Image 1 (cartoon, helix red, strand yellow):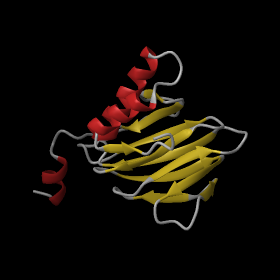
Image 2 (cartoon, one colour):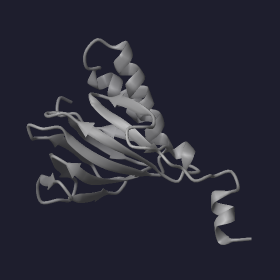
Image 3 (cartoon, one colour):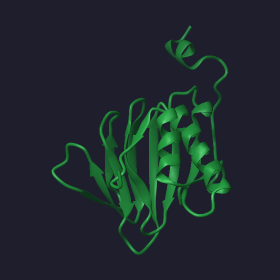
Length: 165
């Protein structure tokens, strides 16, 4: 028996997604185009392309269960990460690892759409949270309230840090 058999089990298969294919979610105005969901990887990780319009991003938040990694495919975002001396400007080709229990958030500060490749380890909790945000957005007129967003996030071990609070 190989050492991978116990970890991955016999049910995992290779996964291929052609460009532009895969599930998509609208996460508070940012499109997530999934390359692999946790259900595809034995719950080990999920990876998606975030398509971030100018002025959009993710509010400051802290994960208790997942680590995240960001690779900027195009555009520019400003990341606020707990422990950094100040906001970080990430342009095309930049990478950032944001471990769990560290507050972080980002915003597209440019005039063009930014594209980020985002990894979550493990990914299932965030996959479910983002699906709930997508559903909330479809039910809401305009942007959902910070309270509604924070309530959903809290159910998935994520704290939203609101500047309005």
